[in-house]
Length: 150
Image (cartoon, rainbow, N blue to C red; front, top):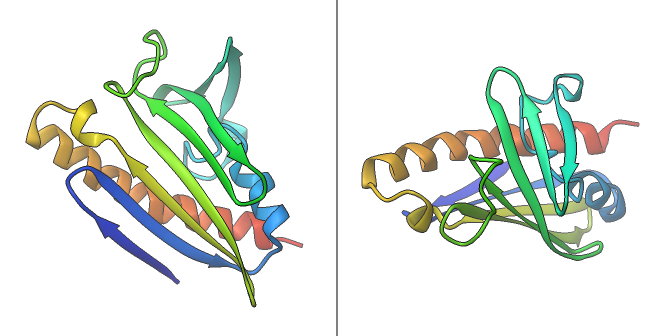
């Protein structure tokens, strides 16, 4: 089961995963795990300084910068559209993962924010919010699938 909240600047989603918090954290703390369609064999990750660049044909190359980690309860990344431009508040979104122990497993919550600064026009921002909202539904289902595997 997932729940969601969408505004003009942020997306929030959560899902209950029937796995220990450490296992879920191990999955979501990998830079760029959330890029693609769930088939890691299509994804190539290279490190360029502090930034991880995720190549996922045919969608492109995406920079991911680890921001902060507090295992096993929190990890965050900055993500952008252009691997040639240093990531900052104006050209990337902040992706945060919050994990909490639940009697049946781990509650995983993702918050992606910063769309208003990243996209100047309301139309482009609305399109990015819509695309990423659908993307988080898929990515959380993939996280659940992968973390619950024996």
